[in-house]
Length: 459
Ligand code: ARG
Image 1 (cartoon, rainbow, N blue to C red):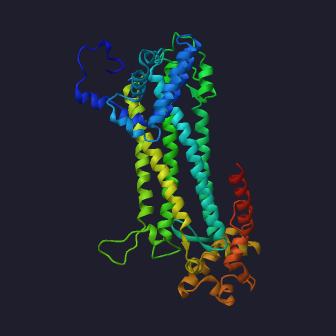
Image 2: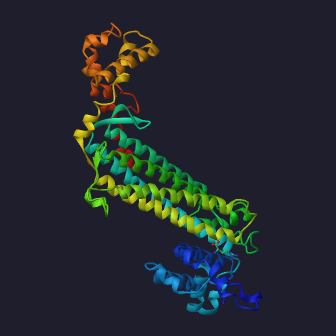
Image 3: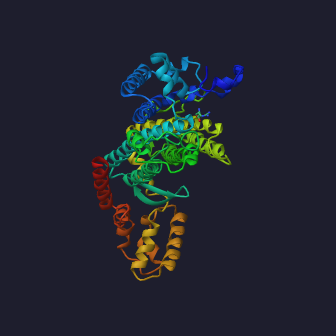
């Protein structure tokens, strides 16, 4: 029988029951649900609904139930119960009889499901922060192992200025650092205990809400019972974090797909992480990266799901909200899988040093240096830009790089240019002149690496 069967004369239609039940999704919350139930039974003891001996029996048996399924949660799925709350209560009554029927005193599933879900989100956020940090460490290692590799930085997918591979790695360390900070903020925002809100309007039992908040690991209790049972902002927040995190991974995937093309070949992916074509024997495809890019779309879909589920929902609890878990679980799992696989990719990337270096000499990446050189000699930047543009055009006509132009050829455009220009045009000097916080010079790379290693390992 269901938890609410009393006022029903007929059994549920089989199709309706299948449609309505949520056990096949929310069974994953069994640990959280039992934790909440144990703390609730303690609250019942504090207000004398049960005595200490009875509390102990409930405590022991709820733990026994948890231990039975902890390592194989799918055992729960053999049951025909409506949801995880009904399943736990049913198991308890089966174990301890009539006393088990007291567990639900003053407790509603509306408050319990959101409490379970908040606890689950807290657990997952902590896990996600750890694996994002691992990814940062892989980027730092990759940067350290290739710290002298120079290659083109791009804008509009056109070669723009020389950068180092380490500098590129650090840009992703920064990007995913924001993912960590975003998650940390969510931890603070969801840190309110809903238990004690009842179905929607609070409860008549005088439990100490701050005590149950403390037992469950929340720092405070919610301030309004209607809001408490209907708030799913934290679900939006966490899926939103997953969406942004996946955007970051898909941009990384796209960078790596490009670096791995036959056209540029800055990196090569190992045979172990690429696949072939069933028709074209020569192919070695970066499917792994394309999948990350594709899965990003799925997570954006989950964000849309939760936003549309909640849009226009009247207060307070509505069954629509049961649909929140599928997209939440899928988004977090997909994000987690993609971070883990990205980490493996990073550990196995091989740089093609020759191709990286060679690419610097095509595409006039040192044109800005020529303009800056002219500025240093007193020419206004706009004019310097114009002169440099004309010199670049000349080099393009001759099909050579800027530094291959003879001095007299450059002088034709402005006589102020002297032999010291060649020092300016050297790719490594382009890097080291950018010795400014966040810049690409080897000095800044050293400073960044030291700072980050300290932060990531010590925190
Ligand atoms: N299974 C529901 C959910 O996931 C929780 C129970 C909701 N309460 C109710 N009265 N149906 O949202």
